[in-house]
Image (cartoon, rainbow, N blue to C red):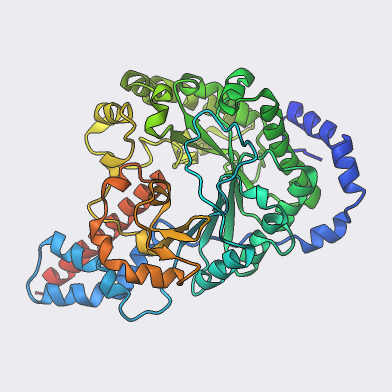
Length: 468
């Protein structure tokens, strides 16, 4: 067992498997039956191209008409291509490609939360059947990528990971599911159930390989051990059930406590990563670097010079660690990738195009503004997303769900698509002040959609030019 792990981590996992927690769990589990009943994670829809494809399908005729009338201004043609009001005028079931569900804003770390946690609490009014109704509505015609988060979503217990929990329910409808968690509650039983449910990916919050620093962030040394045990329990469960899901991703919040030590943190992540020779670039232990947010975290925010050093010197050191790792697991030099090629979404500066260059970005980052220089003039993707809070309030996206402007509606009173249609005129307000710390993924998707639409406009104009 555990043949694709480093020798040191292999022995660690074997030792954990012999501990009473695992042995007592296995005494009550029919592994062969569990293997047979394990669901396979569906493939998610393309987030980078999905919205563009729908707009091209819906609005191409209007753009052709404008070109035929002699309109050649690219911005006017882009306006027509990105007109969601027209795109949704005749389609009852337009695709929702991403569904974010904030299941609870309670946390297993309560009442003393992580050092940087600034979530504003809301009461939980959505019941399990309410969440299932939302998932069932959006799963047709294209099952979305579903993101279960909190607070701590695993507080819902079997409602999330049980045989009839949200994960298995969504997977059976064709949805790829991710959970965002601190991993503290992932016992051997929960680990086996999460794997069995067909969970595609799990994002686990971890910021440092240094126990003292992580304990300061978690505000408890015992939590560090419990979180690591949760991660290792998942690895054991995957091995026992003979599958490679869920992919484990790490959410690392960048602060002035851990910014400079990222290369060694990466070395730690790689040391516990499973490395299959047939797919060495599998996304296990890919990482998401999240700049610390919130005005109340100003004391944790790196200054401009610290950010500049991170994106130049520190990142170069991390690339060296990654090169050494590739060599250590036997990847031929001709097949090796850069860190950005392996994890293109990891680096907040490199994952998107920022106006003004690195120096300007670092000055903005020192003020807690991380994505304003990457915003497109329009938000192309919002109508293909929905983010829902524990009270049922629906927002365009995760950034709005955090800042909480006026919601689009409440899914306890009206459907997800109905709420989007009713507010489609408000799309022209975006981006606005609630978008300055838009999720990096959303910025990347919007930039991708805009490139696709602009390229299509150029191709259409070229075709007309040749024809004339």
